[in-house]
Image 1: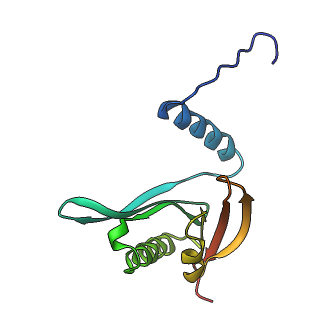
Image 2: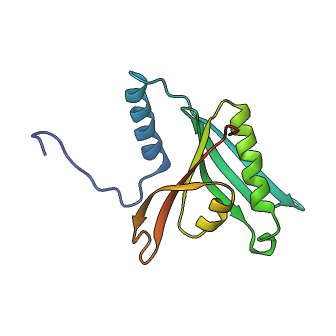
Length: 140
């Protein structure tokens, strides 16, 4: 490391550190490509208890599905499909032309929704493959 600089290891970096890095990176990108991210969530509750949800972020014309979770008792009943459809409709209405995500356990689910594989990381997590998928939100 250059003279006068110190490197410290943060075993569990706080949210402020991670957020600060993201802000600095976005500021750098904004010099050439304006950056605007719109975050949103969809929640499904029963009796005030979360039983399914989706969090996403829209930027540069793309929806990124950060997380989709459905309680085990509701899986296979169309709740995940409905959340994805609502997220895609929201993104399309907000000007997005495509959606992308990554998964290592539900690849077939996303492919059944029209997502296509565009990349993969082998052995992440160990013994698994993390697959990156995308879908056009525009009518063909």
